[in-house]
Image (cartoon, rainbow, N blue to C red; front, side, top):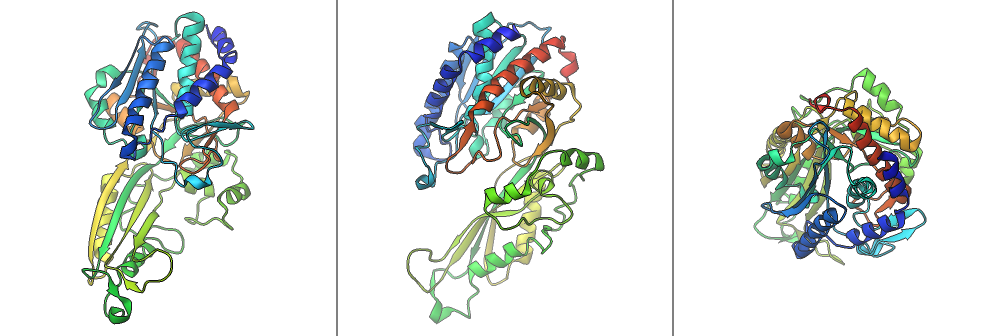
Length: 465
């Protein structure tokens, strides 16, 4: 079965690219209400495609927000493991449009890359598993394991409807292992398995001073400028060593032990290339940790946006009535986003000048996750990747957040295998997002091998926590 599936997949690459291009052409932007119909269209397209490749069931299921696509093929029997493949069909907005070299929703191949919004995050990656399932079903008429899909439409806006959906459909989604491809590998020729994800705590701070914008000549010097108050609060959240100063922030941070530091040190990381990619003259961060540790295994605090006063062309000497900022904190095991939100709120209220009014709002959050690298599911994935790439994958952590991993663990009792197929320079959330096509096709092969490896394990019991 496996070899037949691999042969089928290899002979269908042109069709796979055409189908992915059709999927990517739907502007399923979850953050913008004007694209609600596109969200529905993308969900319906994917459900129809799952049925067309031979899935026994595929449907669009409603939530309190954007719909979820569910699919299943359960013909392998109860003595074989069940994989739950998770992904998301929603994408980020295309802004700024003028920086794209091609239309973000008219995917274009340039060299070995496919450019377009959602190519890497996450339509292209989850579609690799769809094509792996197709390869088995179209070549042999069956899969070596049972497979379910859950593909949501709200990941890019924090997934507010997903947890309630999973809790309400726990029996439907029951499986032995979750497979997610929504990350990256260090180099095109070096596969990786992520065993850790950072969580997220996203906050908004608003500072209100005078009841309206004031003339800075008439009132400046006697009124505390909200922009100044906000800037002072933000600057005070870190010291000169990159250490976050919010009291209690680090209390639950799980330290990086010596064995893990040695493992992370084996992951290739080119600091010069990192500086070139980002355009910065030098790196900066928490002292005592490598750059790789800083961006994947340590917590952060960043101001994501700030506004207030006059920002148009020319000059306007105004003393603004208010200013605001959005601030995110990436969290690591065992930090809790709700607890961090309260620590953040208390800190801001404590240090804010008494001459202004302050409001702090929690936008959304997600818990960090970490997986034992020695679990049999992880080792099966490592063998699968080695078959395709000709070398063992490195084990690393991912700096981003996939909050649903914790939900799968807590609600469904399942371990997640994170098999990233993207690359560090895929321009996620930025103009000219891309996917390296050779790794899209390798991802299909790796998924085929992974199903085969799980099937060889036999009974489901070894995969249970």
